[in-house]
Amino acid sequence: MVAAILEGNRDSLSELVGRHQKYIFNVALKMTNNVEDAEDITQDILLKLITNLAKYDDSKGKFRTWLYRITFNHFLNLKKQKYEQLVSGFDEFFAFIDGSPVTELSYDEEKQMSLEIEEAKVACMTGMLMCLDREQRLTYIVGEIFEIDHNLAGEIFEITPVNFRQKLSRARKDLHQWMNNRCGLINKENPCRCPKKTKGFISNGWVNPDNLKWHSNYQHKINQFSVKKIDEALLTIDDLYARLYHDHPFKIPQKTQSVVQEIIENDKLQNIFGL
Figure: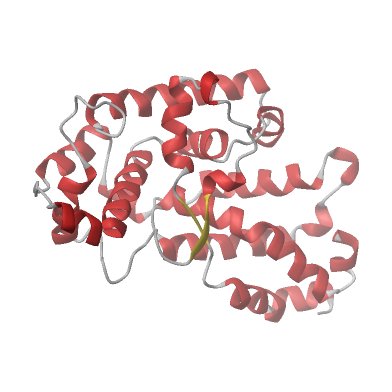
């Protein structure tokens, strides 16, 4: 496929973009917590990948490793994003959550607002991810949520699999400790409940019932892309935390066709590949 693209084959270019765009977009979305930023970052990464295709050397490793090394390095070197500037850490984040109004919903309201409640849950959990530093966040997203093979992760990050597991363990510990202490999804002794916070999230502008960030334009849940076969009897505590994230929507980028077209029509690429 790489050779065909370098020879100017548009179908191969479109196939390459289609094969990797959704994964890159969903990782970007978890990294930034913003749909527009994630779409722009995805396009920038795809352009970077394609303009560097001629530098790929299959004697030095698999294409997927090369591709995701460029992708993840791009994430780590981004300028500070909007939501990274809003919250400095878990203390500040949970102060926002604690300050959000609590409203008891009736049984009928919970049924009627089921999507908004799910939206509030995903928004809150993604907000927790933003409290991790960027390297920890990326490690947790690709290692725990999308379950990348640790050997492959080591190759991509250019560290040993053991070192990757150590980094993932530290990210888990930081995130899970806060969730255990504050989140009612994990610890029933915690008073915070998604239904009780939903109306407050709506009034604060964190959830927009008319334009759901997470529960629109998706066809699957992340767990449908899980590489693990779960044995319920063998679930660890960390697995239980991860499963909450696995149940989040796997969204479809809305610029799918336009990105391909913009890449094909890019003057620099046309000169490189003769498209």
